[in-house]
Structure formats: C-alpha cells, structure tokens
Length: 398
Image 1 (tube, rainbow, N blue to C red):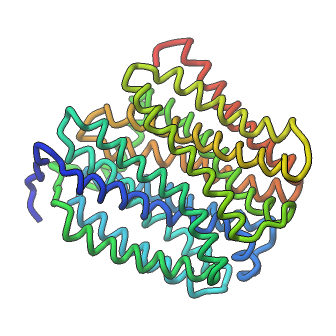
Image 2: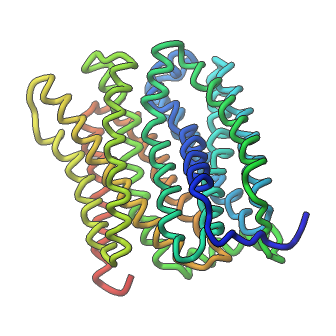
C-alpha cells in the first residue's frame, strides 16, 4: 500500500459529484428500510410491541459504533478500500436479515447493517478531500443532499416494495444494490492514502481530546442529537399510527412518507444562509420547525381527514428542520482541520445518531404504553432540550 496521498484534481467532475451523492444516499438508506416495517417484521420474528423499536434502534446503535471505531480509520487507511470493505459487509448483513425469521438473528443483522453503513460517512469527507478549496462547501453540500434524500426516500421505497412483494424483498434488493455499488466504487473512486504515523489505538484515543478541544463540535452535535431523536421517534411510530388509527396500507404509508421528502428543499436554503454567516438564525428556524411539528398535532384536533393532513404537514416541517440543522452543522464541522476531518465527522455523526437511537426506542415504548399523545409529548421534549442548549450560546462565544 502506497504512503503517498492522492492529490485531488483541480476540478472534480460533475459525474464524480453525482456518484458520491448517489452513493451516500443508497448506503444510508439501509438504515431506514426497516423503519416503516416495524409492525410486519416484529410479527414475523416474534418481537413484542414494546421491543419492536429495537429493530430500528439496533441499526442506529451499530451506526454509532461504526462512527467511533470505523469512520476514524478514514484518517489512517486507504479510503477506497475502507469504503468497499464496509459495503461488502453491509451486503452480507442485509442478506442475513432477508433470510431469517429469528428475532435474535435479525437484530444481530440489524446491528451489522448499521455498522457497515458508516461507509457513507467515509464518502462525505472523501468528497471534501477531492474538492478544490474554493468549491468545497458547495460540493460537500451536494453530497450531503444525496444523503438526506436517501434517508427520506428509503421509507416510501421500503413500503412500496413490501406492499408489492413482502418485507424480505427490500433487504434482498438492497443487498444486491449494495454489492453492485461496492464494485462500481472500487473501479471509479481514486485512491486516497492519508499521511499518518498514528496507530489505531492512538487514533481512537485522540477522539476524546478532539471532543474536549472543539466546542463547536459539541454544540452542533448536541443540537443534531436532539433533532434526530425527534425525527427518529416520529418516523418509528407514525407508521404504526397510520396503520392502526387511519387504516392505511403499506402503499398509503409510502405515499405519506413521500411527503417528508419535500423537507429536503430546506437543505440548500440552510446552506446558503450559513455561508452568509446566519448559522444562529438558521438554527433557531430549525428548532422552531421541530417544536411546531410536534406541538400542532398535540394541540389541534379535528376529523380524520384534518388530522391526517396535519400529520402530513408535521412530517414536512419536521424533516425540513432536521435537514436545515444537519447542513448547518455539517458545514461548521468540515471547516475544521483537514487532517482530523474523518474523526470530527465520526464524532459528530456518532453523537447525533445516539440521539436517533434514543428517539426510536422511546417512540415504540411510549406508543405501546401511552399512545400517540405520549409520543407527541416525548417528541416535543427533544427540540425543547436543544433550545435550552442553544440559549447558552449567548453566555459566551460559540
């Protein structure tokens, strides 16, 4: 293995940007295919309603572990090989999930799917390294947009495939797609070997020091952990609500989930505002969107059509807020040191995906024990907590 880093070309091609954006979307979608299928998967594997949230939670826990133990390797190992290896492991885990009806084995596969899908967070810093400095923010923004679309489209695609075939099919198709993507990236991505004399143990040990010495990382990760907790809680439980209280089929749930994709329009808008030094006001708008998304269904009541329409609006507003917060935070993180970019990104994503794991787990439990009203109150607590953290910005410098 060569020790010379690959030098980015003066102008990264639009085709390469599209490939990287598509790759992040396809990879991260693996985390969300099971989200609208919590009901049928839990029935098929024998999981109780209270434990159904583990289907999503363990995938996110695996992703968090990968952020801490795999993504930092992007500052040490050749990036292309790391990405391809992670994708191969993910494809194998997807096949196991597709072929089992045993609860323990499915949950173990879910953990491994999350662990391997961190390849998406090796691709994002990879794009930053390839981009020329004057275009770095723009290119990373496009790649992150692909990631957001992957998150938002995964749920409706999963529902539609399940309605047409069965829940096993989406995992089989994703395993095949992930394996083909690994082959494509192996041939299309340039090599990038970081220059580093650190050993793996020292690399991991440096994570704590980076977290201690980077206040903006801690702050932005705290905001996004709360926002993603609210996001995961909502999208883990709303399919159950739509099926049980509104009698929607998987196709109906898919159409509902497609509405959330409209929230992605907030990401380029948020990026432009952040570029103009308006990160704080953009953060306020994002937090307010999440508060409205949970507060409106909690306070407003009406007929079946009104309440369903209100849920559609809430999903769009919530996804817009989460997207705006993510892009604003990502921009701040990638403005930091190039030699620690993968580690900073790994820390940022690990912290906020922990929030997502908490949200999805709480969502299923609250719905089972306290119904939709309890879910809304719990969801409201996440952006309220982020607002309290935000208030401390005015006590000192960010």
